[in-house]
Each structure stands twice: as C-alpha cells, then as structure tokens.
Amino acid sequence: MPVQEKHRFDERALAAYMASHVDGFVPPLAVEQFKGGQSNPTYRLTDGAGRRYVLRRKPPGKLLPSAHAVDREFRVISALNRTNVPTPRAYALCEDESVVGTAFYIMEYCDGRVLWDPLLPEVPKEGRADIYRAKFETLARLHAVDYAALGLSDFGRPGSYVARQISRWGKQYKASETEQIEAMDGLLEWLPANLPTNDETVLVHGDFRLDNMVFHATEPRVLGVIDWEISTLGDPWAELSYLCMLWRTPADWNGLEGHDLGALGLPTEQEMLDYYCQLSKRARPDPALWEFYMAYNLFRVSCIRQGVYARSLDGTASNVRAAESGKLVRPAADLAWKIARGLGASR
Image (cartoon, rainbow, N blue to C red; front, side):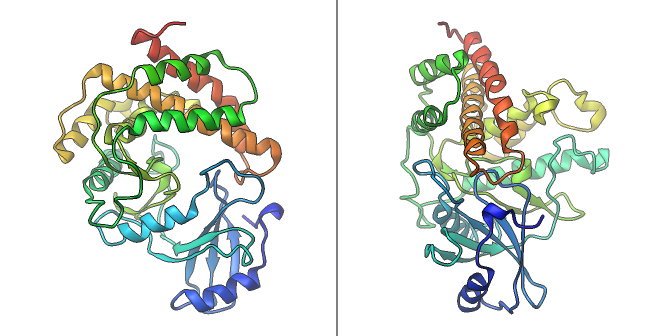
C-alpha cells in the first residue's frame, strides 16, 4: 500500500544512504509500505534497476522498554545468513535517526508466497502437508544451529527462558493494560509458580509462525524466515508449542480447532510434534509439560495483543488492523486459564 502519513520519511535521504551502504543500489528509489508488520513498520523498496529490498524501522512515538529492537534483528539475520536456516540477505543497519527518523535496517526482498491462512486454501489438498513439514523442518534447523559458533553467545541468557519471558511480557502487559481481566490476573500468579524444570537453550525466533515465512512460489520450500525482532536464546519447547498453538485456537483466530483436518489434507498437532521430535532427535515432552507450554504461549499472545492494541489507541501501531487485537486479548487469556485450571490452577 502507499506509505501511511504517520510513517512517511525523507525518501531522498534514504536513497543517498543506500547509494553509500548497499552494494548494487541504483537510484532513483520508490517506497511502498507492507500492510502487515504490527510492531515495526516495514517497507518494500525498489531501485532504478528494478531490484527490490525490504526496510524495517522502529516506529515513531513513545516505545515500550526493549521493544522494536531492529538492531537485534539485523544481527541475527546476518549471522544466520551463514547457516542452512533460510533468511533474507542482510545489507545494512542504520542507527542514525536523521536518515528516516528512527533506526532501521535493509535486507533482501524474498520474491515468493506469504501464506496467511493455516488452512492453505491456495495450495492443492495433496500439497498442504508438505507446507507444514517445511515449517517444522525449518524450525528444527534453527534449533540445531550452533549459536556460539555464530558469535551469538551473548544474544540472550542461557537457562530460565520461560521465567524471564513471563516476567518480561507480564510487565509489558501491565504497562499497556486497558482493563482488568481476571484470567490474566490468575495467569500472572500461576505461571511463575509452576515453571518447568527442563532448561535446554537454543536460538529461538520468538514469533515462529506461518506468515513469518516466505515460501517459494510453487514449491513447499521456505525461502526466508522474517520478523526476528524478539529472537533470543531460549527454550525449544516454548517455541515449538507456540507453532502448535494453532491447533488449539478457533477459526476466527485463524486457527485449526474444529476443522476436519483429514478432509483438508492437514496434519494433526500430534503428528507434527512427532515429526519435530524425529528431526531434532528430542524425546516427546511429558503431556502436563506440553500443556503448561500451551498455557504460557496463550498468555504471551494476550500480552502481545494488548501491546498492539494500546499502540492503536495512541496512534503509533503500524498495522491497519491493530485495533482488532484488543478484541482477542481476553479470549486468549481465558483459554490459557482454562488449560491452567486443568493442570490444577485455582483462584
């Protein structure tokens, strides 16, 4: 879409920067904005030779602490460019706010498909399971990366990932809270008191889902994983369960719950859990542990949606549908609390 008025910047200044910092760039520069990107405004750039790039920048306005870390995105993408994890080529990071008004980075534009609907209506039935396998294969590759060898030992703290995530997102939720939700109050108490004892550390994306991947135009192959803003060192089960959460959520949340998966040619949650375990050579988690991770992830989603909704109220959210996030905060929290109660939680 055309660049929103609140996200406009000096395109001539950006073109001058790219001429000095992006190999092969040819002026003039044309700028469009992607409709997605709820956190960091994201733009498609086209140069005079027809080459395309992607720019991601911090949004304007007051920002929550530690949010919108485009420098971290650039660092991890640059490192993963040297691995078998599909990532766009990283070109340049600019922390000089005088160029476009906020820090930004430029990466390769992956010319492929972004699949938004997990039912995959645009994919023939016989090819849908292959798309799912490609998602989980890519995640297994990421979790197998030797992050220390990539110079990412300081990209996060090893161990206690879930505890730190609960604390971080809980604080951000309270900072952007617009109404009291009983289920969230319960989760804020119950989750820290019932932390898992397993403590494996891998490199995690943080928001690994279907629409954060660009697929090949015709093949079930991931060309690039995008949106690395909250990547860090973390827990592989936390990330895997986040990906599997779509089997627990209803169609109006863009989930798979309630659908006839066999008739649609789609795999089950248990099939994909087994597939990941086979690829990663990890034993299946205990069922109660798996359910804890599901409750944790739904809590986390509520916190994220609340932050997006709060930004929509003050006009800094970049996604045109950001205000809709507010309608989903309570249902996600309620579902998480239902799972927690099944594991013995009470208030």
